Length: 179
Image (cartoon, rainbow, N blue to C red; front, top):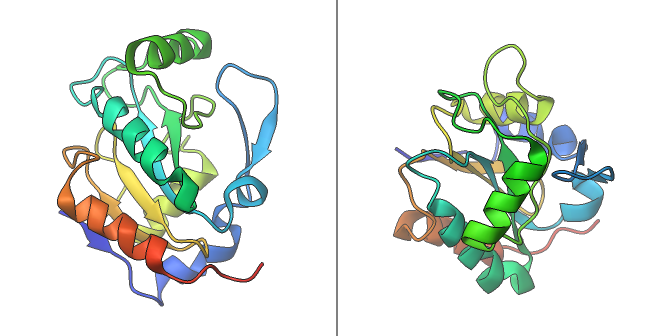
């Protein structure tokens, strides 16, 4: 099931601060402010795991990144071990696996919790905006250029799914907000 957020309501309540967060790059020391770095882009935010049946989606996510990044699109990956221990490795191991196995070049960030009381603030706000927390690895949230959560897609929705692709293209066609 796909959730499409309306222009008002809960989605707009977190539009301003949703991306105003710092996260460390995977296996690195430098922090990135999501708003300063990715604000004004269409984002697909995905919780990832290396030992999951959906792990081959890395390939499709990277294909989306390669094809659409020039149009103001980015995939942001957040590894999480919240579901049945399917991301048990260290950040260095995760980075090596993603790079060597799937050629991942899209931005990957520090390992986080995406559900429960320890969920990182970004995922708490994504859940609040949509009413849907990730139910498993590779849950996808689509964020508009102006920082609104406009859709969410469960894990089984692959990166090449026509509904996901149509939602991304609709957001890419929207006017770029003034900053």
